[in-house]
Image (cartoon, rainbow, N blue to C red; front, side, top):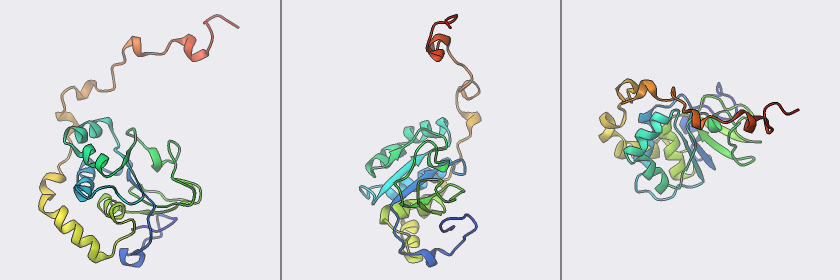
Length: 197
């Protein structure tokens, strides 16, 4: 895992075990649908997580599939905040963590102040992120393996199935068609009638 606040500050999980985690972000373009299924499996039936949990799949198609499979219901049961698919906390320009929070993130960057003012950000897998959310801290190696071997290992084949977009009905047209009635009027964009000075 990467420790605060540089993606090159790589450490063994055992070196960071016990460090408190205030907020967890599972998102970014580096995640795939299997990571969300696995994270939900870890959180399933555990009640509300410690701290704040952010969920942000990379695409609307991932989001729709996760909702259809009931994964979002598990996140809701854990008290997660779900974000519009896209960048969210990864870029730090759509949402921000609390000032000076300690964060565990599945994104690829943890530079100073990127996710929030004074944030100390660890980087790692979605599975580890879910365990951190569950425990409110970075687990020991033993804690991590105990949770993952019970919650993930028996279901690996099903959890890590890829979402093949080309197999989704209407995929080719998804996002390409914009109805004219949904388009904003020029007057609305300008805040005045066309031709006005």
